[in-house]
Length: 177
Image: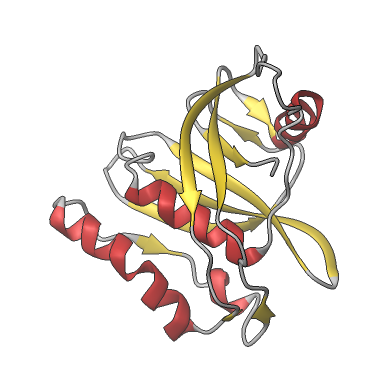
């Protein structure tokens, strides 16, 4: 989004801004990722929610890869979907409005965690998605945090299928800085 312009979209509603802190590079292991998600797990227990489900692919697909550091803090905004949208529509609208940003694994995981801790997936049937790529791999992935109807939080990673749809009320996190 260009400085001084107002965000305008009929498909995305600008929501919560998350500030992401600088972080050291990350070597992906089950222990490292579990440690990063510990605050999420603790928050879920404290709120008396069902035990969270954390996708093993978060580590297994990227096991022992070193992911880049986050050198400078940045903001990421959650843009909620005003209607059910395909990933292709979400990404096209992000490009059209100037908010498009594909994150690194480290950035995307940090945004996902921050969004959960900020209460952005507390309501049943809501969630957030953060798109990312890994160096040396052209594949587009997404972290997703989703509150199931039973109250259980699911945190997962998926390969992006541009035709898959995401329900109205869900959101995608973008930053253009």
